[in-house]
Image (cartoon, rainbow, N blue to C red; front, side, top):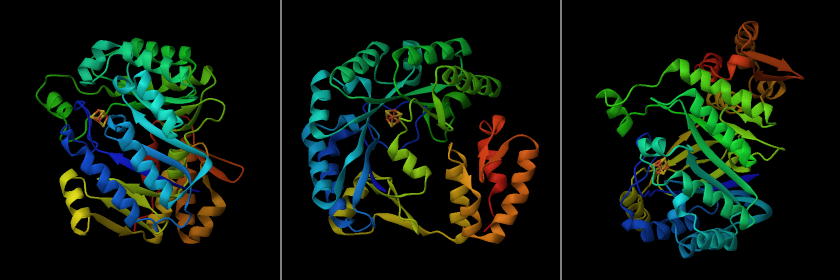
Length: 375
Ligand code: SF4
């Protein structure tokens, strides 16, 4: 399986918490589409398997692309790759972009899945985050997307907002459950360096994230979504009836993908590449033929750690056989530490696979870090 990720690095407004690569200066959008198309031509041989199971437009805000710009990129992909019939084509979207007309153009272009940045069903929380949409727009766009026949709709919600309450988080979850959508990504807020939120916390304009509330709200999501038959298949992702996100699942399963556009990452099993995180430099390098990426070749220990990091965060876990085959000595080190984690109830082993368990999901980063092999 292989997939393509396309990074569209423009946003209408800068959300206070965001540290993704984006710019609110949208004047370069047309040049960016040209440069991404040129990158498709230049890197058409990057993937061993040219049959695509997924294409993911992320960002930034891909729903800022016009119909013509989106089709130009998709046509270029079609000219150099084979898009499998059942391929998932996802567009990340902000509610204020999803007019009835735009939704129609998306289905006409072949987009069959939306990942909508709802974040909260409370207007004052959206204002606090500096989002560009309101609750009414979020509700309407979901109804309109369904009316257009888009079946696969995922929304994002954020918990642990300073100043908010667990009661409000519960109301957000209950509203999601009532909407009967098949997929939810829920992320705990983090204070990232060089964001407006970091400044707000540092200057005392807003409180910091309350660890206790973070844990309480993480557990509440687990409980309410579980009761409503949503399966947690990755630390932050829940789905009903096996409607897992194909593209993101391919990252967690270690499959190859090609990342296009500024800041996009690529992986082909041997190396990782990441494109320069600067819009005009990226476009200029593409124009002049200069190098626009950095690359790292993965050592055996890197590949082993990568498998632990991607496998353990999912419901598929890490296979004992695969770990042994990757490196028997590393596996012995892993096994010794995993036994300790199992002893304190943070991991479990079933049918030859290792999994996170109970509080291990909440402490995933620490559990995985202790299992890593030092290179
Ligand atoms: S819309 Fe998304 S990418 Fe853009 S600033 Fe907000 S969170 Fe970041």
